Image (cartoon, rainbow, N blue to C red):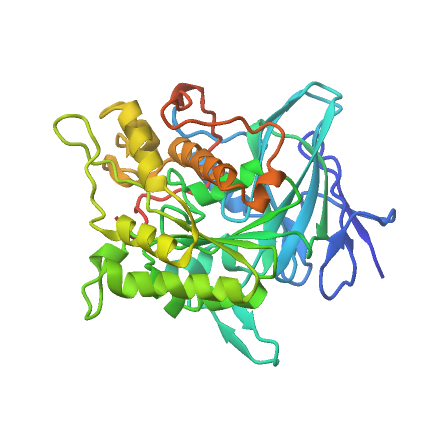
Length: 437
């Protein structure tokens, strides 16, 4: 029997609407008027299939706050059990009792709603599509396999059996959420390493979890990137196999590799050898499924010379990718070039504002300074996500028609001022930097 879930917890969340199409599959939409009342005592369990999640984590994080790292009193997580697929989320922010400021992320800190403000009694509705996945690979003949994820990925929200929504902000207030399957929207598949992955922990972030901010509910972003991966190890782990099992005509697949590939020393390794061959595998698999492949050159590292210019640290890997793109007539987004402009525009010192550079004690348990010149903080990842969007626009890719109305053209030579960037930290933090360099 189809039922609607309704949550009411005062000013934080006034109602939450779900309708399982079939209780055993937990496919949700918001069409049924009959409501089950759910309050803050309904904690997520696999048997229940929905509920508030990570409450202890939020409580513990609040005990570790300092002047820099602070959480709003209204931060909460809500999870629902759903099978693999894309899900349209319709979410209304606002409250009858107070003004609100709400940011919404999903799964591993993918940004969807940013700094939505409402007056007391005002409500605003947003829609977006979340991609949910697990490690199981299902083949047409009924056989199955699994993605061989890394040990640390076992705790990632991206790979579990539930869709998790994070409600954050200075004064978050969500009045309703409806979730329904969205199987027919085109999907933008992301393949890459730690500069692309959905980073779980503050203060790290990557452009793959920020680019979701710029798309309407007419497209899904499925980020399969993982820290430390090379093009060849990505394939060997079964990540590409999983993508191929799900992709459909009209989708796009982006491949950004190079950071870790250049460190491979096995026989046959090299930019114009196994790296170029692996990129060709991605392209061939995509084209065989009617999917548009797009190569993305690796982001620059923050490595300046004495003249204040960025030094190339990726050897001939960016050039090898450009060669593959030309040889196979594949479209290419040159993040290698755009991030060079971005860092040089900021300058030697100010460019640290785009990376994980923080003094000791900024985040819980941080005993040493963070001085990471490869991985971005939220501001840097946010800016680079706009470079990816500009690449999409310049290539006139079909997904460009699904950009939100509030997206504004971006030039890496004229970046946004980091002082004006607002980010509400997640309670998930770590002091160990991601794999890869």
